[in-house]
Image 1 (cartoon, rainbow, N blue to C red):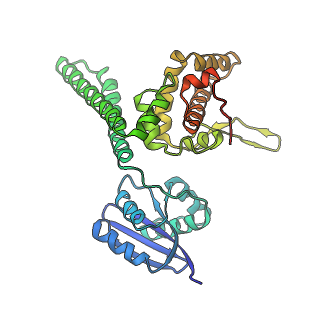
Image 2: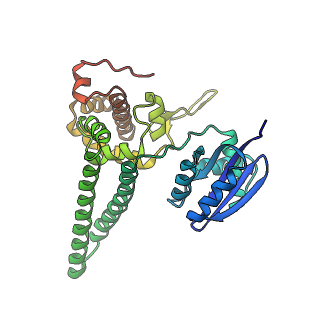
Image 3: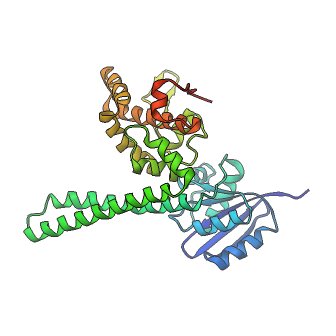
Amino acid sequence: MAMLSFGGVDVSKDRLDVMILPEEQSFSVSNDVAGWTELVEWLRGFSIVAIGIEASGGYERGVVRALLAAGMSVRQVNPFKLRQFAKASGVLAKSDPLDARMIASFVAIMPTRPVQRPAPAVEQLAGILAVRRQLSDEKVAAENASRLLEDTMLQRLSRRRIARLAADIELLDERLVKIVSADAALAQRYRLLTSMSGVGAVLACTLIALLPELGQMNRKQVAALVGVAPYAFESGKLKGRRCVWGGRAKVRRVLYMAAMSACNWNPALKAFHDRLEATGKKPKVVIVAVMRKMLTTLNAMVRDDIVWADHLSGRHTMPTAR
């Protein structure tokens, strides 16, 4: 019987450091097409169960695609969790080969989800959303800086820059909708999501691109995945304050803005918000609760393929958990 192996790949801009456990075999290749091909051929000599790759700002995309195309099971490892795992293992030093070893150990011990290669349209959406986030951050920074400007020329330049950024963001928003509209499956999901008042094009496209698990999990799982599930902080007689932690910050950021809007324009969610506020809940607790309510409802709508109006009318009974 062949020995089952686990791989870890540490990614940098120009190089991939690889470790295979328990064989203790290490390997380094260039982070380009030639290196990916060489890596795949080398890995075929092992009975690989899973290959872990730490997210590295996009430098990992090429090798992930190559490994998935070769039929290998890839697991994307959260950098924060990996560092905590290393510390818990007594490994305080950090180097590329050592990181590759820790990644291999992590996927061998810790439960991880296999990476699914998204459809080309979904990858395109994710790329546009990344640029949109950058432009939005630049626009907010420019607006904040403009308030302190006293020189007339600088004020004029600042207004021009802000207007250009706003125009670019608008162009990207139009592009997002065009991409979704050109794909029947994505268009149907977009229609379901935007049927809820408060869910606009940006949130809908963000959920489509960055939360493909939507509709495939129960309400507690999806809330935890995004980072809007409260965790207990209790021990013995200590009853600490519950807090949210972790999750997909890029999704949570857009969901927060949508929840702020929904509290004003969605009657059902506004009533939910006001009811919590009347009990004396803190504003941040209330808005997170609205975010969680929106997310879990959208999860059920996608799962059961129904629009918001059908949910409100009661024409379809939506189970709260599965």
